[in-house]
Structures are given as C-alpha cells and as structure tokens.
Amino acid sequence: MSLVLQKPRRLNPGDRIAIVSPSWGGPGDFPKRYEAGKRQLEDTFGLKVVEMPHALAPAEDLAAHPEWRAEDLHRPSPTPLSPVSSPVSVGTMPFASCPISTST
Picture (cartoon, rainbow, N blue to C red):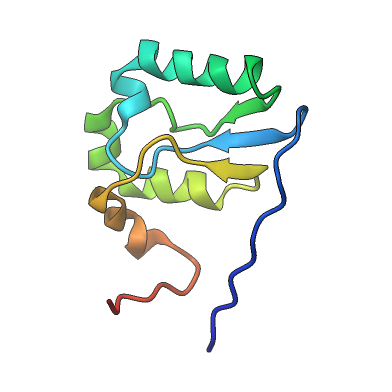
C-alpha cells in the first residue's frame, strides 16, 4: 500500500481548528501559556479554536491513558492542530485505527 500525502488547504479567518495533545499534556500543565497561544490563533488569525475532550488534561492523566489521546485524534474534527509533539506520541500507536509505518 502506498501512502499519498496531500498538502492541506490554506487556513482562512473563520476556519475551525482542533487542538489535540498527542504527547505529554503541555496545555493542561501550562494553561496560561496555552491560553496565550489560543488567543493568538483567534485574535491574530481569526481562527475558531475547538479543544478536543482531552486536550487540556494534565500530563499525568494523559501518560496513564494513551487511548484518550488516540480518541481525540480519531474524533471527527476540523483541521487538527497540535500544540505539542514528541516521541511520547508513539504511546498512541496501539490505539490508532490507521496504518502506521514503523520503519525509519
């Protein structure tokens, strides 16, 4: 099976974006920093921010429940936008419903 990547369309004012936390839970642990970034997206770019259910969960809870992060990624949503990304995200792989390549 060959994977075809598509360039997403440009975001425009009024577009909705999803906030997910696929790694360690920075938005939940640093809410003031997260809120500043959210405000920037809304005020400067005119985007409508939609937080997925576990996006603001504390890092400790997300670490204990990688399936929560995967649920947020699979939830029907507008264009996903991740505020954080790290190797910790691999913890969601067993819960992913899409083919994932583990080759490097």
